[in-house]
Every structure is written in structure tokens, then in C-alpha cells.
Amino acid sequence: MSRWPRAVAAFGYEFVVGETPELAIGVALLIVAAWALARSRSPIGFWFIPGAVTLLLVLSLWRGTAQARK
View 1: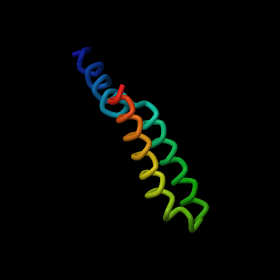
View 2: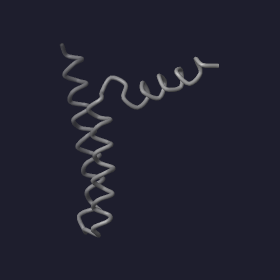
View 3: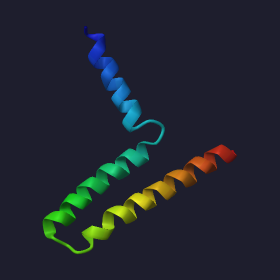
View 4: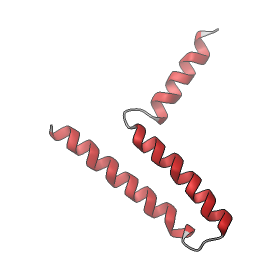
């Protein structure tokens, strides 16, 4: 029974972080920034999330293709 929680934690870490911890950190920061913008009722908050997600996706793809070319 004690191996089950460890296996679930290892799966969760591998699923969320995987090979790109930078992407996981970026998503966490994006969520915090979106929360802060929502609390301040800033009109830029509406465009912040799609723009930031697009930027993270482009950076992740650029990093992945650069590693594949090596």
C-alpha cells in the first residue's frame, strides 16, 4: 500500500513536468498572473491568457525542434 502514493506522485510529476520544467513553471506563472489581472479588473486580462499560451507553445516547439536537429 505504501508504493501506491509514491507511484501516483511519480506519475503526476512526469505528466505535469515531463521533459520541460520550464513549461510547467511558465504555466504556473501564467495562472498566477491571470488571477492577479482578474482581481485588478484590468482590460488587458482578456488578451493576456491567449497571448501567453501562444508564446509558451511557440517557445516549447522552438526548443523541441532545436533539440531534434542536434
